[in-house]
Image (cartoon, rainbow, N blue to C red):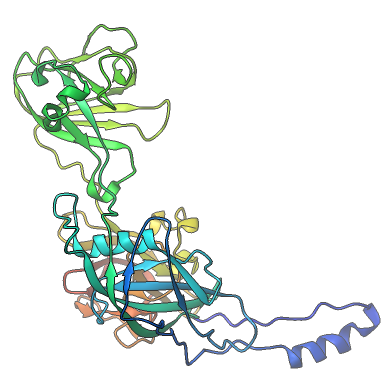
Length: 414
């Protein structure tokens, strides 16, 4: 499924058009698969790379030979071992330059993420690791043009605490004792926070489960502990509670700037799940559910192929990939979807699976051979990291990707 690019010279003069076209086509550079791509080992590689906000780690590489002077896009994979079973892909400051400038902050975040570092576990005296790096080169809009370099290692990279932690707000009310939401009570209010989900940091959707006794279900929300007035959000602007009821164990309503509390006089006591959505300015909402409810967004992966018109699996094409998601409904690492695979013109459909929409390159779940591979039905089939496609006859299938065992299974839909 490789796209071959020809570059034709523009023509001047109608009388020369036929001749010029013929000459240009004969001489036009033709795409070819590059065979070598080298990431250089930096000098003084055994020295300590001490990462700091605002800093840069500089690497250099050769440019792959695509058969013509192409503009190449570069990125790097970062891992803590040379097998790259778990890695993070980083985009340099100038993605089209063979002089690769990685932001120290991006590398520090990747290392913290790979190590599972949290604010509580970070030890500034034990924060030096060996980092393995490989580069990836590709051409924009040319599917299958990706090539991976050799691997280098930086023996001593000292990272800092550069993790993204979930944001939070506070619930203040009867069951929280109506203590003043001020700085002096910061320790107390740690138990009354609503948090963003770990896989939805930056979403501004906050949830928490609280034990709310009967007769104590009156509350509002604060985005900061600055006192009673400045950062309060509730049912209305006025400092007066409004009564609400839950239907089938659920309430959904609007949230506004102000001190109007929500009150549920019929609440019989027990666990209550509260979710506040502040993602869209002017359209804040609150959802109340009886019982402890898992509100963590379900993770998804993406199928890429002629089902998506071979659109690049990038955030720019996120809308195109909305209908090409496999979702982990049971939160067990198995992603499933029923998909209508279209005919690519030969009665077959070609595809592979990407974990994130981060651009072309090796897919996390691709053909085990690196080439087109006929996927047998009803049989868990081992996948591999790469760009080889699975192949099925056009039709509708239930497809599952088991990320625990890296297998792909397809069953004809009933």
